[in-house]
Length: 251
Length: 304
Image 1: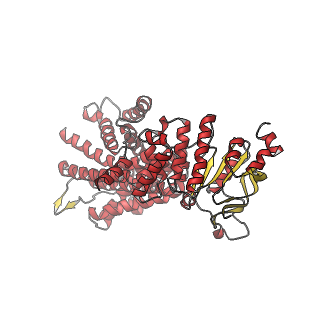
Image 2 (image 1 turned 135 degrees about the horizontal axis):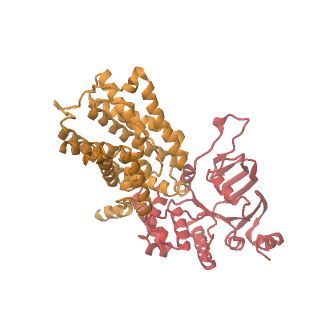
Image 3 (image 1 turned 30 degrees about the vertical axis):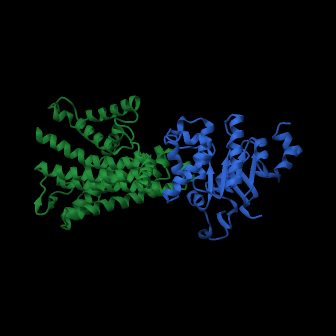
C-alpha cells in the first residue's frame, strides 16, 4: 500500500505545554483512517499541524512524497527549514473540513461551493463539480440559492464536506464531522463519507470524539491520549479492544 | 452660497475617493484601518514637492503619488496585517500620526508646519483647471470618482473580491479553500492606500497649498464614518456617505450658524451618528452590496 500522508515523530508545544509529543502515524492511499481521543488530547492540534497552522517542534510531515512541514531544527540553518502555508498545502490536494464547519454563513450554498473551487480556474469544471455535489447531496441542490446560515446543522456539515470536495482533493481531513448533530444525521453523514471514499477514491482522515461511529466507519484507527498515540490497530480490532471499550465506548 | 455648495461637492469627491479606499480595506477586507489620512498626506506632499521643487506637471505627479502611497501601504501592511481588530486599528493610527509628525518636522523637504504654498494649477490640453472656478474642478473630481468607482466595482466582482469576502467572513475557512489570506489582505490595503494617495494629490492642487494640519487623525475617523454611514462593502454607499458627512461637517457654515455652533460640534455629531447607526442600522444606509458571482457564470455559459 502506498503511504499518502506520513507523520514522523512530530511534537507541538503551546508555550510550556506539550500538545503533541512524538506523534508518528501514516495514512495509506484509499483508506479511511480515524483518530479518536478525549477532549484536549491533541486531536485538533494534530490536524492544525498537518495543514500548517501550528509550527512543529520536532519531526516532519510528508504528503505524497513531498515534505510539507518540518520542524525548525536549531542545528541547521534557518533557511533549510521548510514550512508551507495552509493555502499551499491545500493546493497540493489536501482538503480540510474544519471543526465547527466554518461555513461562509452570509453566502448562499452555491457561492460556498464556488469558494471551495477557488483554486480551480476552469469554469466549466466548476459547474460540473457543483452539479456532481448537488446530485450527491440532493438537499444542497434544493437549497442552492439559500443563505447558508438558514441551513440546519446537518445540512451545513454536508455543505462543508461538499465545499471541501470542490477542489477534487486526494485526501480530505474531517475534524469532528458529527459535532452537535443528531445520531440519525451523523449516521447519514458517515454513510456519505464512506461513499466519497469508495466512489471517488478520496483518502479520508477522520478525527472524532464519537469513537464508535468513527471506528465503524474506518479501516484503521489511532487512539490519542495526552498528546501521544497510545494505540494503533485495525478499527475492527480496536472495537474489540478491552481498553478502548472501557474508555471510549462506555462499556 | 452656491459657490460654497460647489466647494462641499468637491470635498465630497475627494473624500469619496478616500472612502472608496477605506471600503476596500474595511468593508471588503474586514480590516479596521485608521490611517487613510496618512496616505492622503503622502499623496498630497508627493504632488506638492514634485510640482514646486521639480516643476513636474500635476498629471505626472499623480501616478507617483498613488505609487508612493501604495509602497507605504505595503511597508506598513506587511508587518501590521497579522494584527486583528483593535490592535490593527492602533498600529495604523500610529502610522497616520507618524506621517503627520514627519511632515511637521522634516523642514528641509516639507517646510515643516508652514507647509508648501504656490502649487501650480493642473493643465489639461492647454486648459488650466483653476480651483477658483469650481465647475471645471468639480467635473475633474467627478470623473476621478467615476473611474475609481468603476474600477473598484470590477475588482469587487473579481476573484480578488471573492477572496476578500471569504477572508472577512472566516479566515480559517478561507485558508482551507486555498486562499492566501495575507496576500489578499495586503493587496486590499495597498489598493486602498493608492486611491487615498490620488485623493491627496487632488487635494493638493485644489487648495494649492499643503500643511500638515490638514492631515489629522480626524480625517481618518471621518473617512471611516463615511463608510460606516453609507454601508460597508458598498462603493456607492461610500460615495453617498462622503457626501452626507461633508454636508454635516459644513452644516454650520452652510446655514450661517457658524457663530452659534462651535466647530467642535461636528465631532460630537460624528460620534452621535456612529452610535445611532450601530443601534438602528448597523449595515449602513444602503447596506452591503450582493455580488452574484455564480449567476454571472451561469449566464455566460448559457449564452454560448
